[in-house]
Image 1 (cartoon, helix red, strand yellow):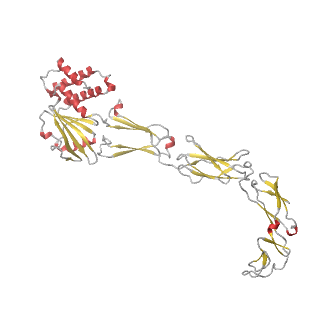
Image 2 (cartoon, rainbow, N blue to C red):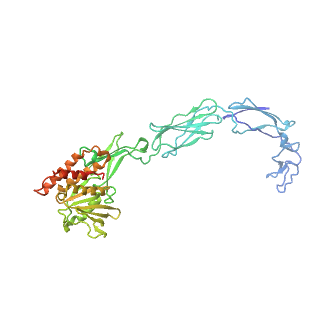
Image 3 (cartoon, one colour):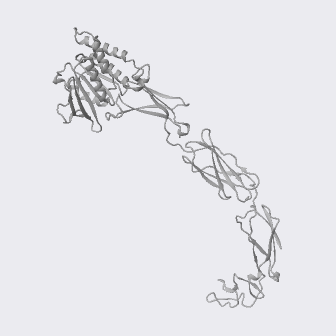
Length: 497
């Protein structure tokens, strides 16, 4: 006997189960009224059902007035023919001598992975994307038509220009969803799914609409730089801050504005004083151009500041300024070697902290030389402590040329960082020669510049400046002209000793 099976899926290996049911005929005991517990159905294979009637159990069938084992109704010679991807013919031999009891056959089948492979009959259908996050979303699809066997899907995410597209391979006919991860934040992707088996051609779905991942905080700006004051040619006290938008893949959102924070005044970032920041906003613009902001009143960290001695009522403000302006060295030119006591603005007690408004001072070192006095003063604002070198000396006009060179070299040897504050009751008369000579010494000390420095012209400049100051100090001073004096200054200028 045979039957033709057609399915909506490719035929897999079939397990055939034939149920044969005999014609029921009346026999002794069968159909009689019975009791369930205990059962009074005495024939082999009989049971008493809830209807209180004797019938054959599930392991037997009714035949010849009694119950016969179903095992005797096994079909034989089960064969398959004309097998293709959607149908096949199943044949078998009925149980011998039992045809009078059989009125139908029931064929049951199930599939497993031993497939007869065919190509997909239609492309996958991609469903709307769900669970969209910052760097992932969930893609699902269905494959319409007969089951083609072992299928491999390729999920294709095509990114907008600037980012890499993504591909994910998914194996198995029933595996029809995938979490696409590793995506760029706030970026557009289209989705398509390709289905392929070991035979035939692949089928690819239509391309979906664009789906955008969620936004996130933007990354760092690019090309951030400060055009420092000393690098400008128009104004040495101006500084320009400029930057560009984050790189395309680091923007992560629609940037609305940029916020620039900067310290107020000319306070060094490590001074520990003030701490007040000013905020400026810049509306985001299209394109990749520079954003910029110019600041005036900017002073390089390594420069000179000039001021007069503070009056008694301004001493606290003076020391606050020293801390805020990152001054690490004070050079005080007094009116004479015998400095007036009332002009002192530092603690008189050694190793005794003294409060000066926002800061505390403590003299920790004191060394008196013939021409100057050197102190080290700790200055603290409760958060930060640093040391200020304080040099007190007579006006430049009282120095010999080589003596003044020695003094400037001594000051420079103690300067490691920060600004130098110059104080003089005579204004520029003492401060200009100091700046000129200090600059010369720094150039001579710089190996990269030493070969380019004209020492003799530098010496002439120093001698000229010193002579001018001497003339300011006294009317009967004769300029520095003696050869021995000039040679003495030249020898003193050498910085490699």
